[in-house]
Length: 422
Ligand code: HAM
Image (cartoon, rainbow, N blue to C red; front, side, top):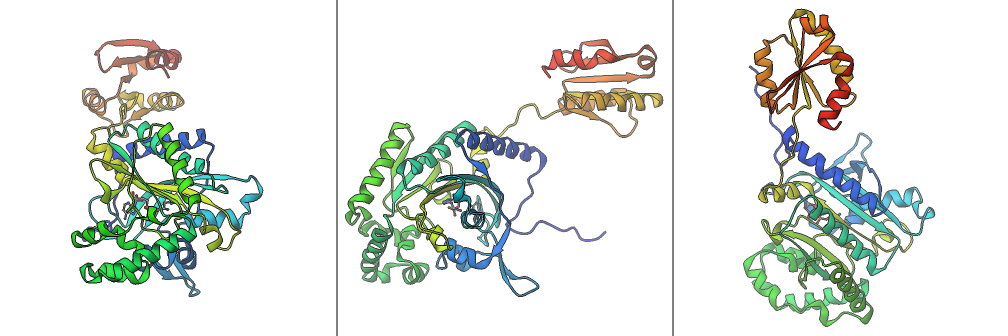
């Protein structure tokens, strides 16, 4: 036998039972986004590498170390998308979507690719659900993003959630704070890990995100952003906090939250689940008032978030709420005897207009079919035998009570609708 092939490291199959959970939570996201006035956008899986260099940020780990980048046949550099935000903004500009409304609200979902070190909750192909609100600098938009994130995760049954919140200040404050952090770290370089030496050169703020124990001690002593924030940035942040308090969202301010992407200005946030903690946020986002300009558009403020679906499903499993009820067929059709197959096939066609129907492909003994129907969790078995066909009826067995009835073939849809609420 030929050697069996396996999925690539860092990728995974989502098998039918789990896919049902994914489908349920994706559908819920679509419904909720609709209620908040977001419209779906679908963007390409690959883009010009330059989009991520300019959008995600040339100095980020994502662009420096984690992108799947390759030349196409004409030698252009392409990359699989490591995130969706730069693509959404590119599409917004390319199709001049600003023309339609002052504020545009998008949601998206799909696979993203990062050459990360695979482990629990870390994949090389993972899946995100996300939103972007483009065209407003209002703190109410930051609050709406957090509220939607919160409502969504609560509505799929998750508890044990907290929002970790911070501000990085507007562009001026951010540059000033970066300088303050750099000055402080310069005198403490010998206490930092080798990765942080690298971060210190590329973007000193990223040091604040290091998980290394030695670095954490230095980080704890680093001056906080509050010490240098301008009054407008303070006001913006306080208003976001007041909105979140009014919405009764469980949040805490963490002055050391900086996030891994470089485009953030002012509000940043992550959603943390108690099972995984801060190191494996379920999702994150923030305001990015410079990005539209970076990718060639006019000065346009924006805010958004993305959630990692693998991590959301993991949290649901931790809480024991990853089951999807009612996965079995409504009706299992059991043809009994050679001459019953065409009638059974015709019945399956009629029933499939209203119900989930399973029918075998190979002849099997009736008792074996009933056993399978019961194992699959079918609610009814429709027995189509040669006698029944002659009499123009179908035998219907309630798989829970074991009760069996005979119903006229023409009445079977109505009868089942009454029983199953179809
Ligand atoms: P991010 O924090 O890089 O933000 O990713 C968001 C979420 O994607 C993470 O919290 C995590 O759940 C999931 N994620 C990231 N990398 C991996 C991985 N290797 N394996 C599994 N899950 C992963 C963004 O992507 C921004 N685009 C969010 C945003 C939207 N900001 C503004 N708008």
